[in-house]
Length: 116
Image (cartoon, rainbow, N blue to C red; front, side):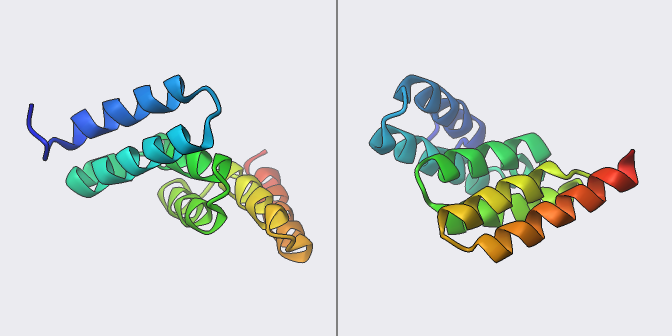
């Protein structure tokens, strides 16, 4: 198998994340595989769902800064989506930045209201 095949790394990362069963160490390995996949195959990073998945895995292992960068990327891919702002707010809460979290949630509400 080709170690430079991004799609293979993506599939491995998804399988590793599912198999991790909540283990932070295993989830961290899965996140690394997913990020490597996106580096090897940049088209993977153009998918809203893929980018959100990586953000979610990183948030799950408390890598809040990196998770938030993926949520920012997701919002640039799909500007009318409010979910990235909700999840960014969760990462800010995890860091104790409640004012930042409130701003992020507020933005999510405004986006949601515009789409309704």
